[in-house]
Length: 127
Image (cartoon, rainbow, N blue to C red):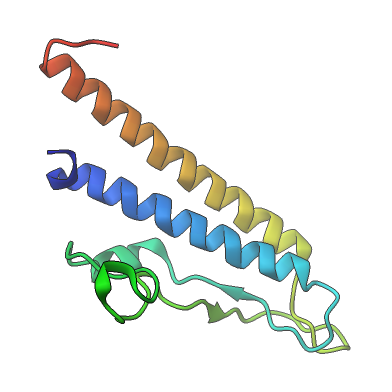
């Protein structure tokens, strides 16, 4: 029942997207001093969610007994200023992106909680 609600499907997609974006941001920060490293970022969530058809997709090789590609798109190279060593990571920009990703994650969890509370209340089992 939970899986068929559009709102919970969107919240799940947002939580997955936020986690993947945080991993990309962490990789950028870890390579902030690596010469020639290009900062990356995920496409906007609205683009990713628009492509989501609601069908089950494999998220890693062997998942669902399928060899289909990962559910989320690969990170794009972000355009920005480059340091003299060819590195394009801006720690300030990465901090802003990490806050956005955290807020998206918290919003997805709040939607889950609210949906769960509504379903429990409709079943006569309040928290």
